[in-house]
View 1 (cartoon, rainbow, N blue to C red):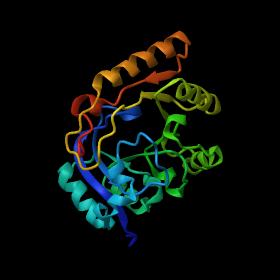
View 2 (cartoon, one colour; view 1 turned 90 degrees about the vertical axis):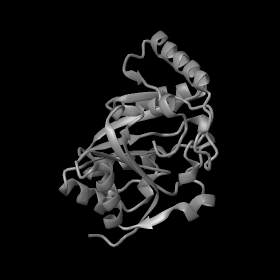
View 3 (cartoon, rainbow, N blue to C red; view 1 turned 180 degrees about the vertical axis):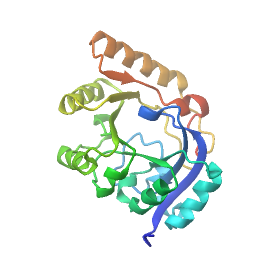
View 4 (spheres, one colour; view 1 turned 45 degrees about the horizontal axis):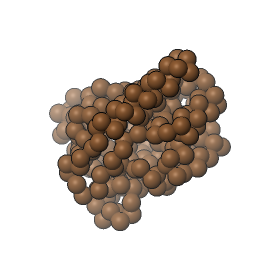
Length: 242
């Protein structure tokens, strides 16, 4: 087994996947630490900002797997590899080990870093960041991610939308990749401070954005897009570990 260590922010579950193509699916989360982006509305700063790197534990595959199997009771389910940007971590050996035990792996990334082991995933969610994030998309790097994944995993496109500029960005992205199923997600208005366990979320603001987005898609007859909220935010707010 690989001796490479993985920076882990937290491992938790089983709970449900709260968003995107696997919404509602029982899942154990392995959240890695570190990111090559710094989005203005990031809701997981505890896994992104280097200020919190002393909370990220370098773990071996064996150590991660002990915790995953403890949480899942040894019963195979889906493991979500998240972050931060999990693509910057050496996750290939973990995926191989989990598959040998009957587990499935889903990963979400902005598409800025491509890895060969993308092809071994069961689900790859590519979530390029729109203008409201303050980040710029490198579409060549995004295309590299698609090439690395090849025909291995189920691939979906997910884009967070806060405003008209984000909506236009989503339309452009969809036109680039018409073969990918597209999920639109209303932006979470109130990212929590990383040290808060029970951050208050403006749920009504999130739902206003949801209704606005549904109306936009319907009025545009954009019937290929699927609009979904962050289910975990509606249930638990921005609490960590759920």
